[in-house]
Length: 464
Image: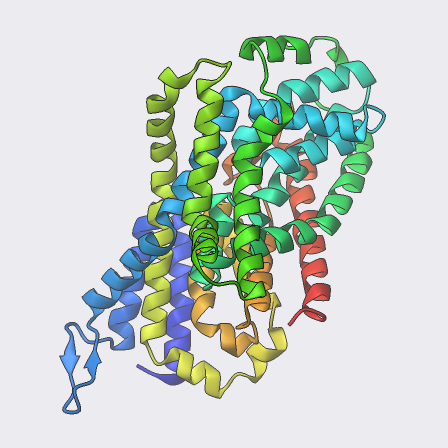
């Protein structure tokens, strides 16, 4: 099958995948793999490897699926595991709480919504937004009690801050996986920098929306806001003693510095042993491994929690496993698409896609996110679909591929509703009914996604 019928088959395959995940609750891994197999058969990929008379080998469907799956693990598997492990260690040692405390001191208690939002943004760089909300919720409640500010405004501000960095900034697994799939996995420092830049407008929009909606909606616990189960001091006491600021930052900061040094060495054209060492240490896998070592030092230090490291690693692997497999399945789908004649046909008839450009990955990710709920699934799946057509979209340079990752991330926020676990975390811990959750969390994520895409589009006009 070629031409327009293949495009129609592809659209049908995506719809089937979305329905399978959202309506029939089939696991995303099985849904994506099944659709990839069927699409490969329909597209006419040979069942087995074939060798032409000139010696050219055409890969069979099984080979294509295997290459797409293994290629993802080769490029990104270890990075995702180490990034998640760093986040787990920061939770266990109280370093995430220390980072939040540093943000409060920086912003001041006179701007509690802003402090809450920035606190979430910092903590969610290494920690999943669901876990981050649970970790920081006692602080949110304590600040509500101390300042008398709206509980809903504080919940929305925290949710927005957590969500923005969750979809934009590595080492969160979603952006890492998307960056690797789009061929910029070795430029994570650039992805981090652009992710931080693309956070500006969504954070501003989220802050003002939180202030606005806090006046319109009241949480169920606001009538008795003095009933705070855990004050900030009590929360700190559970950890015994929080690590100091440098120790808390080191697992995040050191990998960034190593990757920065590697990039500087490359741009400066250095050579010799020193350059080799910097290039080695600046490789994302090694940089995050060094960050993990600094995290382990936290466990060995004053916290005396090294005995928990085995179980911590085990639980992290259980959490990361589904993400890895869904990411690999997305790689399979991308490989199947690349192995058909669809890319060639799209390239020959690229006027429409060239017009849509940077908005195409945003729209596709938003459809996937709204349909099946998981931002990580939306990020990884969209990246797999978009990767083969980056040149057609005009997004094939490193900086524009990074903007494509950001556009996918913006779409992966749009929108959080009842099929998203984060929706229920925010509404339950924020003491809101589902109806109030749609007015707050769902609308906030719509504001975040659109404002994020606006900023990304403006940046795309200048960055090439």
